[in-house]
Image 1 (spheres, rainbow, N blue to C red):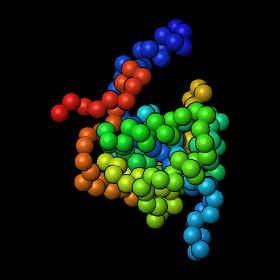
Image 2 (cartoon, rainbow, N blue to C red; image 1 turned 60 degrees about the horizontal axis):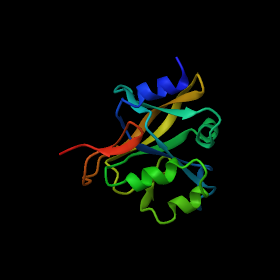
Image 3 (tube, rainbow, N blue to C red; image 1 turned 90 degrees about the vertical axis):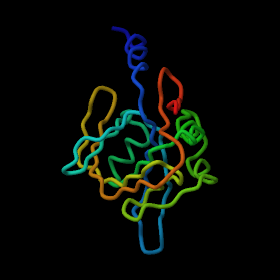
Length: 170
């Protein structure tokens, strides 16, 4: 099977869209140091309720993969259908620095992870890496959920299907 055939087949699987964030340096009493980075992902899922575990698939050698190999705490914002521009902003391959991407984006900083949580997300999760598994050209990062929120956000989930962001019909 060719890569194009596989990609075409998998594009028929609708997926939720999340923003994975991490902070390059640990928090200190004076506040966060280092840079915040973010990455749009569609390969994200819950793994276990007890303990609460989630998994994200990262391209091996990507900036996020390299950072999460060093920094065990990270966060996930489950994007709403109103946040298509946020997903697109962090999905660009040749982009400006992450600092500029976060500059005008409403967010808070997770108290546990130190990572940025996107305002208006359907849910947020703060995680600690439990396990990393190499799978082909990706790393599967399994994280224990240390804190989560499910604010009353407007809209439904942002999904990705057949190469485009979509929203569910009401």
